[in-house]
Length: 285
Image 1: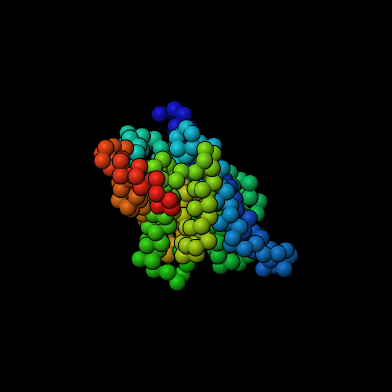
Image 2 (image 1 turned 90 degrees about the vertical axis):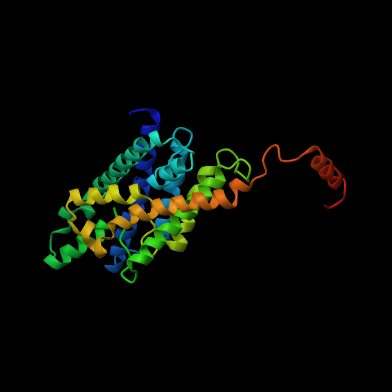
């Protein structure tokens, strides 16, 4: 079990959550300070950048060992299309959950004196304390915008994850236009950034069951209350199921529309090769 792929998934997902959730914590604290009139506000764009960088770093750390999935939706989709053995799926998912939990715990400890339940209690009414708990629980798990319904939230996660998986498939497709060696992590990180700036406000674009569930469990253990799982009509299941469905759809779309339509290596007969040669002699053709 404790082989290098398992450990690579733990480490890469740890970095993903440490940097990603750390950017959420900073965003919330800076906006709290701004509302109190003590410092400037930090735009939501900082979270998009934080998670884009987090994904890039995670892929650089473990991409050559485990593929740096860091996401059960990626692992399940790869296995479903024979790009990963199903035997490895439990190991990968467990590693991702452990890494995400440890990353969230580290963020909790680093910011303990400012956002922990113990730090929020002095000089506040009971209602203010509950409101603060609900707010800072959002450092760990995502919560939907109140103007969204369950269908919108689910579709949001399906679409965002499908986009991510289509790009991941294209990056690894040698018959398409794969990026130069060492550039793929930047492309994947840029994709997460793009999903964030375009589809981020409905649900906070978790697009990753490990990224959402494991830190949410940490927030429950840390004392933020059962609100972390009961809020928004038990929304917590959507960032688990939605990304799995979206990942499968994303890979299926790429395979059906691109990968399965690549010409085979033995496509051309001798006559076709001759025709191609004749055409290649013609200018601008």
